[in-house]
Length: 454
Image (tube, rainbow, N blue to C red; front, side):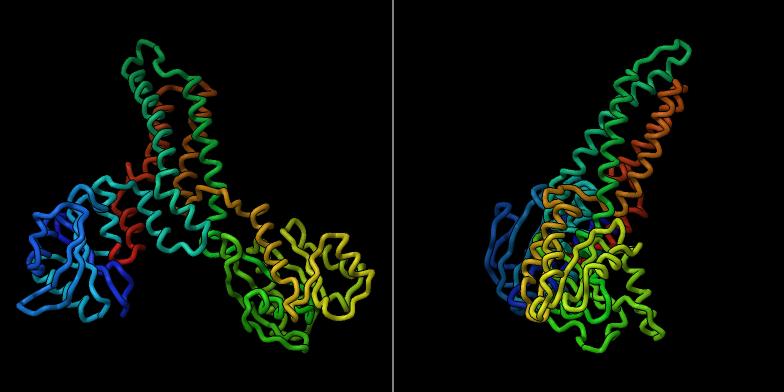
């Protein structure tokens, strides 16, 4: 990318709509747009103002538009930005963009507006990634975490710790200059406390990584149970859609069936599975094996019983299976609309199992509320403010390796040069999170995931 160019792109989604926004950024953006907006000299207007008029190119009126002006450095990219709000016709959008290209602009690359915002110091690299997360966020929690990253809640803490570590590292470097004098400028106790603080901070963030996919893509909830207990009917009731085939014939579900809904502040991904039983049917056996394999990736298991065809002993035997141990389980007694023995009802109520009728959709909302509370208590707290992505995770793992070496060197009273080297590695890795230390490969990978126009 040549960052001295003036770039242009449609910022609203592709396709026909009532209105669209075309964004232009660069030193010459106002001059270029002036050539097709004769209604007013945009160089003479104030920043952050709106102007109505016609776009005219080659003596032909293309559209009536509203122009928004953001003059450097008070803009997203810290360059001159012009945003053209036009009607959403694909022909109009194309004509305006082509006229701007003819006058000296070029088409923006993926994420180039945000890339310029990063390069010009408006946001750091972690905040730039948050922009992408904010656009793609599908749940309240995903939105909240992206906003906190964008506000700098995460990167600000990284910067403070890194600054403190730089100050102590500078004193260590000074010690190296006076190595023959055998003096210590860096307080070892203060260094130890700071190293421990960084280590604890990294531990918390690394632990949050496993929740990242759950927040972004959905919390995996698998529906398990014997054949014909109503698993597929339950899935359809939860989704309020006939997603799965329902039949009285055992073994109807032979493959995994997935779909998502929003419960509370989170996306929940439900998976219906083949009924668990011994069978000689090869295809059904494959489905059962897939169900057992899916358990490993699940956050919650909804284990379903048919209240009319079970007893206390069989419930206890099923729940003692190895694959259910140490799992987040919600036990469901289904088909409450049919005649149920009072002894099994009392047993389920005594153990705080939930009783529903998925066919009649009775107590389905109660189950959703239970799931929502279960997620808050056991998986994702709504108060969670920071969660890291895979790049941050790998970087923080490297930070901790360097920190462990620093701890060992401090305990063994190792040479100052070893301390200084490991601290440098820690500083470099912390800097990679915010972009204070980076390379073209990392930047290219991050911004290639953006949409054009952002």
